[in-house]
Image 1: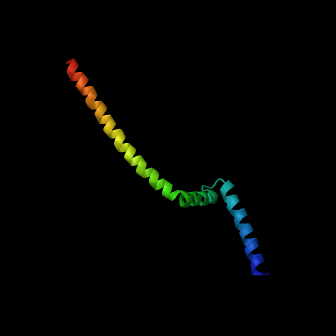
Image 2: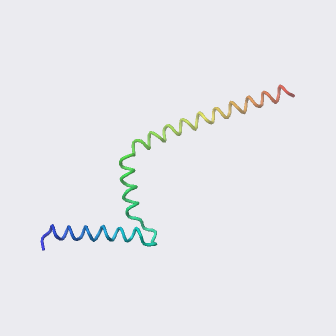
Image 3: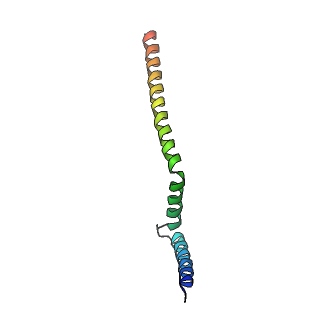
Length: 80
């Protein structure tokens, strides 16, 4: 038995084992974990940029809400 045969058979067994664990009612999902790790590696810079934009947007929304509240206060005081 050569090293190539051992690696081929063990990787096949590993794939089958991971698939069975994924299907079983156990809450261990190796394929999901692997896919999530690959996704984070590929999209890491996009996610950081998105978080920066989200923070800026939250700031603008807060400022706009404060401006609207002040406008409503002015209308109430004028009516009074």
